[in-house]
Length: 294
Image (cartoon, rainbow, N blue to C red; front, side, top):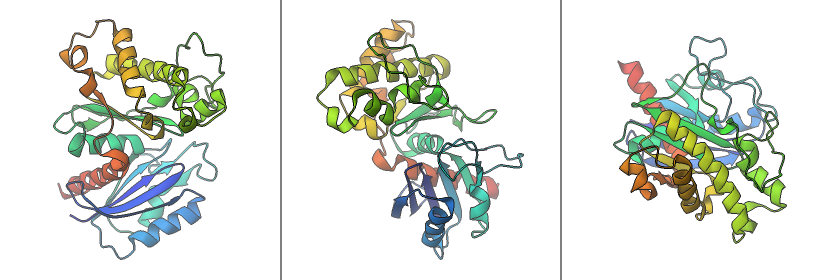
């Protein structure tokens, strides 16, 4: 198979050509500006590449209901210019191939379950902590959808006892994204996270919120692997802090050796590294092509 992949992020788009085992042959990236400008780069890159299917992992919210009149749209996003943009429809104007469409984090979760840190498992979650926070999930071998799609980055938080920051989410103020995404760190402390690497309190509070969310995901979805990526997680000191808080939060209630004895290999960075989203989009392309052949 020769597949096309689009990791459509709010900051940048990454496009690639790859195969059905997750291998990436070539890739390119460019800033996310207006739909007209950004999509012109996408279309130019894929023209003449003779791909059999396209996979798109997109920032959201997006419409994943194939019976909906706005299926394939980016919907109520706060990203300027992209509100109610017909993403799949624009691609169909130029490419007569099957198009797989899902959230960027669901794509990454699928890629990690096939070829990354959760390979061989039928469930996992992928959490990205960067400009925003998003979470995708594979449950019993299938991507988790629903009425719309999960928005686990916007769950409500109990505040750290030493944190008076009001929160940065334009919708909920002090939800997970509002308290723990990169912009929240910068606004709370007055510096970007990369400049605060040696400040233990910064990462102790960050881990408190991320672990609280992960504890809830464990109790609700019981995933067999939790993968956490994104720019904020480049601060590797977060992982032991998060694991410590998760164990404290669960307090022995979940009696699984995976957590009680092997938590270091349960809550982990992406096995696919920084290309988890792009490889996940290849997985979406493979999935939609397989569906169309059945």
